[in-house]
Length: 293
Image (cartoon, rainbow, N blue to C red):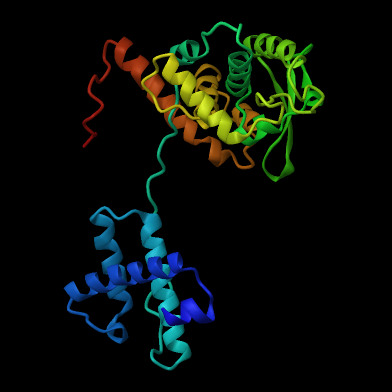
């Protein structure tokens, strides 16, 4: 720990986490009757990681613990206290990737069913209509400038990860909401700013403000969901895939470099199709909670 704190100038938080991870491995090793770091073998480390995973420790946490053990043994080897690193080639198990949370189409309709007479609510509806219409990331939304919009043809230009530029279609509802907002925007402080979406003080809206406004809007509309901006992007992708089945097109619209990133939405698509099948087909298997043998 002293090496971390002094020589490597690690923060107290890092030192504390490092010590906690090593203690977790040491406690499991003791249950295997291994009480000294010099006695720990690769088989021990592999068995400890497997048992901790069965006990519910996440793969990410186990990867961090393995990193701590590798760091310890590198230190010991440098000082002649050990000859091999028993954690060197051991990988942590990967956690199952959770399916992204989405809103049902009727929930989206309910969320965005507000009157547009208040400027800030009008702005919020324009933002969220656009996010859902075009599948935008939060960072992409707040970065949009007036020059990026061409509402006459229903198009927006966004700059995504890695500086990749995409021209995206904008739906009719979003175009109407944005036009309404732009009418209010002209009379606000900072109207000469290049940003499409401004705060009440006339500055480019901050990502945190967008998050808070969506949460507030969902609560006001009686949605019993923890709504966050990326949920609208997930909803866009799953709804589009359900209706079109065109995974490659959804990949392009989302700006994913690798189609494997987009393929998570095929799970959502299958769930939708399976539900329709089970409810409609005369020979459907009604209970999908029991796996095939």
